[in-house]
Amino acid sequence: MSLWEPETLELKTGEDIIRARQRVRTCMIDQGFSLIDQTKMVTAASELARNTVDYGKGGTMHIEPLADAGRIGIRLVFLDHGPGIKDIERALQDGFTTGFGLGLGLSGSKRLVNEFKIWSEPDKGTQVTVTRWR
Image (cartoon, rainbow, N blue to C red):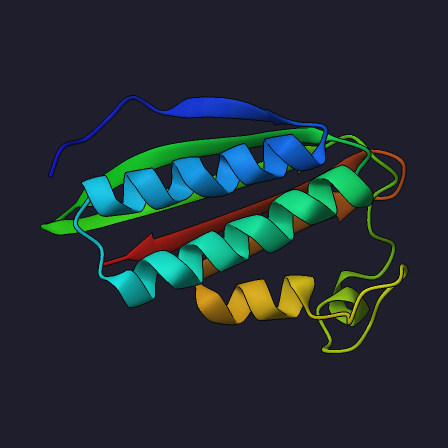
């Protein structure tokens, strides 16, 4: 197990989403997370990266290792400067979508991580922060 330097990845295309997923998996393995924890965080990262590209018109994913009182974790921060989310509470409900998906991206991601924070303002963008601890 080793701590790496935090890094930021651009999210503009489908290929960027794949790279983000791969980087999250590599970091999870490096930090000694179980296969189940890896799968949960990679799935959440994939959903949030896709939202950043599709709805936020592109943005970034910041990934950083965490160490706190003997706990090891990984934090991901997704940031875009897109149209924002008008009603966050509604957007977090299963089945709600403004696109063509199943409406499970935000709500599903929230269930897959230990900590979930979302900030959004119309016409200013959205920031979603997720953390998984082992």
